[in-house]
Length: 380
Image (tube, rainbow, N blue to C red; front, side, top):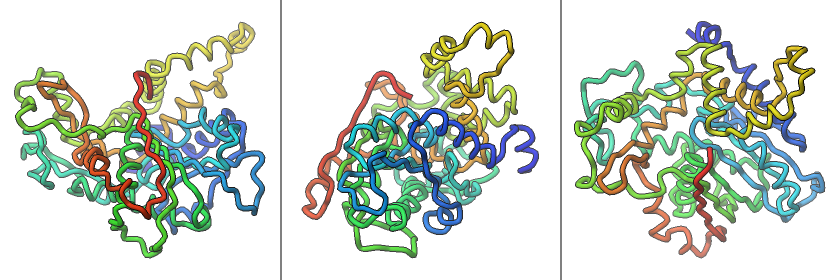
C-alpha cells in the first residue's frame, strides 16, 4: 500500500525533505541546521525541526537574547515561516529561530492511524457535547484509535515537551519565545497551561524538574480560543442546509483535505494545491509574473525556483504523506452552527478556560512575562 501511494502521489519522505531544503535554501538568507534523524527519533518522538542562528551569534558562548520557536498550524509545515526568519534574526533581538513540525505533520514522523489522534465515530468518547452527526453509529471507519480530546492534545505535546527539555538543543534556562499559528497557537497555549499548572503528564523517560523557560507566548490567530456555544444556541445538523450537512458528515467521519489531495493523484493533486495557494496568497502569483521575462517564456522554463512553485511543491509533499496528525481536525476541533455566531470551528476543549482562570499569571514561579493573542482579517 505504501509503494502504491507513493507511486500515485509521486511523493516519498526523501522528496519531502528535498522540497523543504530547496524552499528554505532559496528563500531564507540565513543558513539552517537540522539535528540528526536518529537524535530526533530517540529524544523527541521523531519531531522535525530546523534552526537558524543570527549572524552575530557566537558559537559556544552564552547569548542572553531569546530563542524564538515557531509552531505551524493545521495542514501546514515549518517552512511556511520562511518569510519571518530573516526579519527576526536581523532585528538584533533574538539569537536564533527554531521552526518545528508537530508530530504527524510536515516532515515529522507519521505514527500509524491506530496510534494517531483519530476520534471515535461510535458513541461518545469524552464528556464534551457533540453534534448529532458525530454520535451517529451508522458511520464506518477503517482505523479508529478512539482518542479523546485530552489524549489527542498529549499526542502533540508529549514529544514537544521532550524536545524543549533536550539539552543538546536548548540550554538550561535559555529564554524562549513560543509563537504558534492557528492550530499551533492552540497547542502552544495548551502547553503553556500544562507546564505552568504543574500538570505535565508525559510518558517521557527523560523527565526534568526544570520547567522550559518560556518567557513570552504569542498566539497568532489561534483556533479554539473562544468558548463553545451553549447547547441551546446550537443548530442541530438536521436543520442545516445540504452543503453544511455534508461538511459536518465528512468532518465527523475523519475525512480531511489532505485525503482529498491524495485521492487526486500526482498531477491533479499538485494543480489543486497550487490553485489553493494562489487563492489564499494571491500576491505570490503576481510576484512570479513580474519576475518572468519574455525570454524565459520562449525557453520554456518551468520556474522550479519561483516562490509559488517552491511553496506548492512543499505543500503537496507534506499533504500526501501518510495520514496521522491531520486527524486532529476532528479529535480536537468541531464545526458548530449556532444562532448567535453562525458557523464556526471550535475546540472541543477551548483555550479560554485556562487563560481566563489566570492560572499562568498567578504562579509566582512562572517565567512567563507576557501573553499576546493576535487576530487578523487576512492570514493563512
